Length: 137
Image 1 (tube, one colour):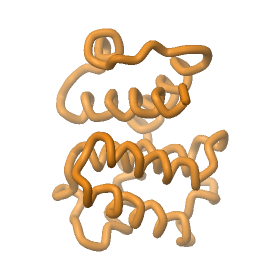
Image 2: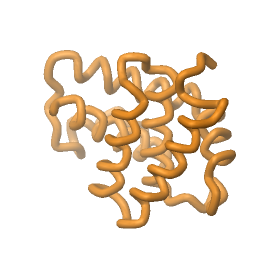
Image 3: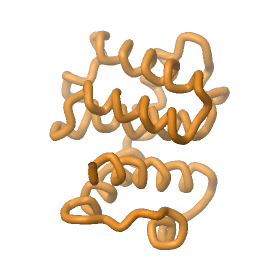
């Protein structure tokens, strides 16, 4: 259960950075989450990974977004997609099916009802494609 909370915290940090924040004080000041065990290392790894691979992640999201251009995707949905796709492509500790399921749950919690279906569709298409998560970049 802690990993789900850590994933939500990582997504919120990615969102805060996208919206122009620094991310430095967000965990302590804004996010009601106390990291346990290796949660902080996970959060730091995902946050840094999404930031360093944002261009590649966004290119895949744009390629597999059937109905929305990337600049028309809700910012919170984009952050959820980035975190999940980072896990699918680069974090080999997280199975792709878990990353997708967790992304859908984050969408249900932080976004609009239709976003969960959209996020599931985009990530599922990426997983099934030749550009899928099982390949090494």
